[in-house]
Picture 1: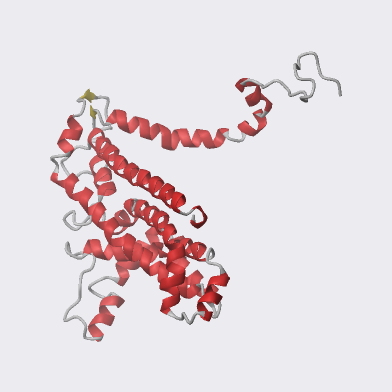
Picture 2 (picture 1 turned 30 degrees about the vertical axis):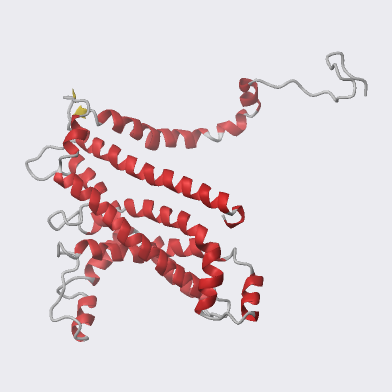
Length: 324
């Protein structure tokens, strides 16, 4: 084929001129059109609330009238001296530290057991473990409130009949026990999701390694420690941080179960924000601006966790790209 007049190199094939950004968007206008509904939803329910909450955090505003007073960073200064905010923040951190390790270890043990090809009815067991995940939080809250009731709850009944406790325990009504009871419910409900993550990680262990381990005389728990754990360890960073972010979003469970009580003993950050903005104590006015400032600080804490997750994943990939 003869070279065109604009091609200075006769041996180089003709290349079409590069289109501008507008021309490329117009050429794929139908494809971009399908993105519009998703962008509208994202803008209305994620982007706009994020921007609005940062603006509201600079106001002294109840959220229910037009009296907005710009106060700058006063809401943030007040939050750092608010004992309820500080207690709720550390309660969220404590809840995360209590649930994530327990959830990860429990799910890993179950995943290793269910990944055994010799185990019969493994599909049935996986379904039973995953069943709480698809059960609505409101149903979980009602069922667990009945199960843990100190009056006629079956759990207290079993403990009393077994002679393990002298009298019934108010798991959800005791300020000392309520957070740990909610942590146990949270782990029970969401362990199925973590189990799926671990099962996916276990699929990366080659069968040849199991056979080689058998030839070397490695059996039982030694296979788990010396063969399985070194390979799935890089996944623990990702799974752990995903579980941590999920544990920080525990508002539906606590709101449906205890609403932060008794005596604020189970009030985590999300419940504090909701109570301050929409459901304060009788005689106290809502403070949407103050709650927005708390939400911004809480969002920054989650952002730090997310950045840590990205750095940890990059470090794991750099160390051994085949493992992640």
